[in-house]
Length: 101
Image (tube, rainbow, N blue to C red; front, side, top):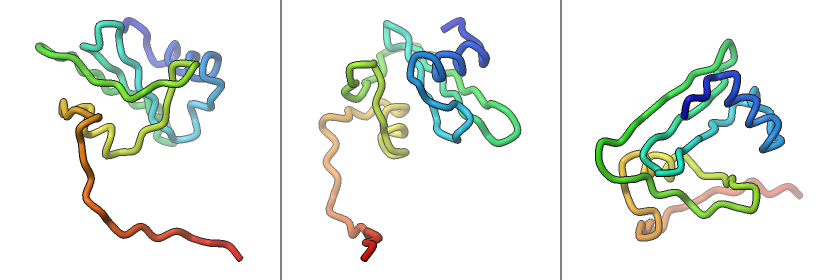
């Protein structure tokens, strides 16, 4: 968790094969799952958010073979608030899909 902005953006580019300038939010968690950093390009510079838990750990979603995954904003919020991701039950909601003909 000692990595700075340049090191984190390098990890995104070299390890994850992603472009850190595309506007996605990248999450880095330490081995003990007690600290995390969020890296986000905001058009004119990087923003970094760092949080260290005094008690407890972060629950991570299931990761793929290169230790990455995609989550939505709700899952991120649940993770930051300490909600168990596996036991969250969402109620039915309408979702509009754009269908091309």
